[in-house]
View 1 (spheres, helix red, strand yellow):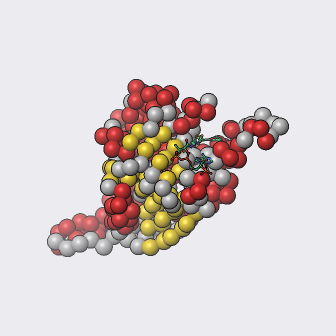
View 2 (cartoon, protein in one colour):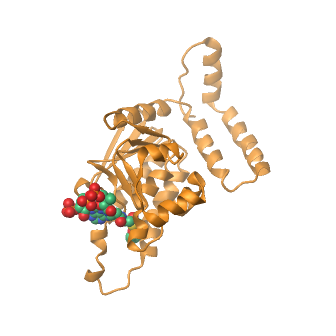
View 3 (cartoon, helix red, strand yellow):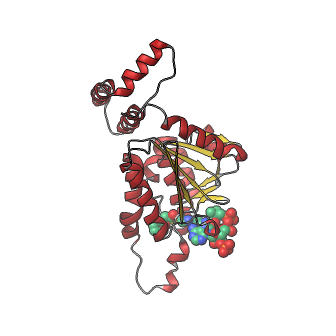
Length: 259
Ligand code: LHQ
């Protein structure tokens, strides 16, 4: 259900249930969690690339597992969210390594919002983002009610969430919801090259940068200035900073180690 591949400091995680448009069942959840924990714990992993196999990125929760006619009990979606989706979201946001997402096709429901939790989202021009939840009486989860208003403002967040209209990749990029829309046949080459480039970069500082920008959502300017001072102090003590400055002065390419 998940293809895991490591090379050049990049851990590529490919959602792999293509006949179900990579919808999440428990097995895929557990595999993705394990992949993310490896990304967090393995020092040789310096960037992560999340993508999907086949024509879709991810269609969210597997609704085939959720047929209300096949269960006598009232469903507890809170349990599924607490057990699977929320820990995944927290991992994506808290791992101090660049997390890239290559949205290769439709991203619907939780699939869309998991993509939006990543640090850099590239999408194939033919891909669409669908806040599908409202079609089945649910609310956007996987951080959607947090990320959409921040990325887009309330008007567009509510428009997408209430209508479930598909948003084409190019509009998503024009609205600032994702980093870039890329020609379909270029997507994986471009995303892999960017992941590789970041993985070879000063990843200690990149991790602090991610942390600092995320903290801005809940900080005042004064708190954020204090945080910048503290994180810059740590960045300034890194081997990567010493190497970056030395390489600049020597007019040569820097060899960063991520520490
Ligand atoms: C699927 C699915 C799918 C199963 C396509 N499940 N089979 C959290 C907590 C707990 C519970 C509930 O949910 C959540 C969070 C959520 O994510 S809620 C939102 C769940 N996702 C959706 O509502 C999206 C459902 N899918 C769609 O609307 C369409 O499939 C999209 C727009 C993604 C793609 O449309 P098409 O390109 O026309 O493809 P298709 O609909 O023909 O799908 C292809 C196959 O994939 C098909 O199976 P089949 O056997 O007929 O070939 C679909 O049944 C299957 N599939 N999504 N979520």
